[in-house]
Image (cartoon, rainbow, N blue to C red; front, side):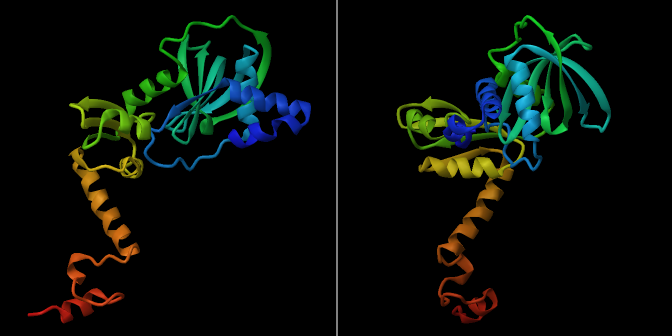
Length: 245
């Protein structure tokens, strides 16, 4: 979206209108519930069609595939698009089910405007991203991360505050909480802080950090404990033979 914004002024009028609608109707939701990288792709035509429907308050119909594989037709009043982690969602009022819903765009197909306009309803929540996060939290089976960081809360918020909850513990320490479906992002995010920290939970996060730390040490040419005293490039078996008895 940032790249498109730079060239939008030289685009044909029809395409420029779609890109501008996408930017205006998208709510960024951060990374805190999406620790891994989503592998699903979304058709740009689907994105821009939904963005225009949100902007123009036009009711739409589309086909939707649930997590269990059941395919249904939906008739909705679209509200906003949400980019959460690396996954797109549509927040809309479902006319058949008489309630607000969020839909993953990689499961949504063939959106089509009906031409019928609607008066926007009040969304139950602070914004569309908050609504999507609440829905994910109610069904998620991921990890709750809690860490004590040896740095002021203001510093940590500046680094990763968009993706985590940061509360001060005195003037030089803070507590960081985040949720994730996988542990890659918490490891990377905590490393970005640039300060000492201690993992409170979960234990699996410590195992990930040991694994990453060992690989980074090898990449930097630092010898692992079992290799101390061996020459660079020495294999573990060779290191074992060269250690003093």
